[in-house]
Image (cartoon, rainbow, N blue to C red; front, side, top):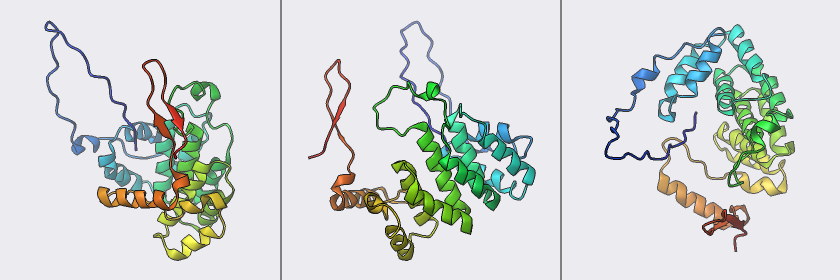
Length: 255
């Protein structure tokens, strides 16, 4: 549920003492995190954002104990609308927590969040330098909200997810809604046909797109992805041209 940036390797000369090897923390250490209550919600989100993906079961166990706690739900919804978002990673964890609570009362709030404008301050993220292919933070947040909305599984949540899949202006958010709806309906043929009959023509190839989940075979997934691109070559991303020593990489259209 969190992302980590690798630090560049440190350089040591002969006179600089080298740090001793430190064993990575075990899963037991993460079980010492805070319980999830209305009073500890902020502390919990900060802790959960630092838990490695391999230990997310610890987070789910904590969230499960908070189901049915109205004060907790109210506090998390209040945090959801603490805008503009200053910490995208923390807000992604917050959205995941709301989804894992599986409380239908969160559906209208998640749906409203998906359509809300100005989630992040332009001055905070507008000047970020990058390759240009990463989703904007607001799109990432809205896509996660759509996924968590679908995960609630209520009739209202299903209809709102379908509306997002059809009408949302951002392609990444529509794609998230399409995939989440299918995932939460066990990729049924009936739901695939239902989506194909409602979504935009350009999004139809996204119905049944390969999905890598825990336990997936990497080689089988790679074959599925290659098969998808063979059937839908227009869905391939841009190819990056090699850059010169003083030039950034530039994309070109695939042949």
